[in-house]
Amino acid sequence: MTLAIRAVLKGMEKKSAEFLAGAESSISTRRSSASCLRPPTCVMLRSRPRRGRRLEARTRMPSWAYMLLCADSSFYTGCTTDLDTRFGRHQAGTLGGYTAIRRPVELVWAEEFQHIDDAIAAERRIKGWSRAKKKALVAGDWPAIQRLASRAKDKAG
Image (tube, rainbow, N blue to C red; front, side, top):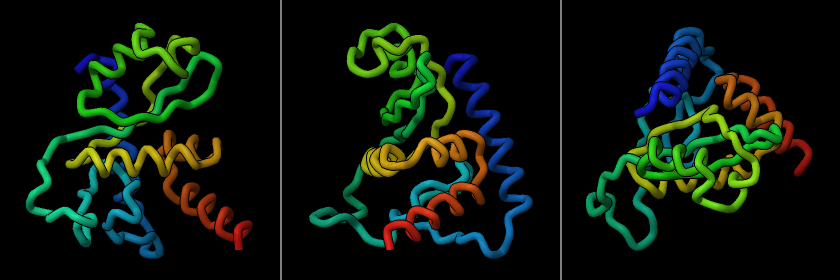
């Protein structure tokens, strides 16, 4: 891994350790596919296999969901099985698409998952979030993420 990616991951580990040390009892610790975003040191457990698949039959392929900060201050969210290579391709502009015209990009958040479909689910969930909620994720501010999620529920209901 490049030094930039290692630095981001090391900072995330520190933030998640601080969060876990000071976590309040009111914070949910349920670990299921329905709440796949949590401090990066937590383990993802699936409560039931996806339709048509046996849990044992799924291959364990470490995957990443990640977020980039583009030069125009917008966020790009994606997933991959090789974070180092994918980040390099975004930076070089060889992928085309959204990040190609918004370079340079900076890796601001990444979380490793044991299965690619978990990373895809996290990516899709994050893409639907507000900018404020994405900033809270980058900062590792888990109480703010919960607060922003409850506000969204209040507006919908």
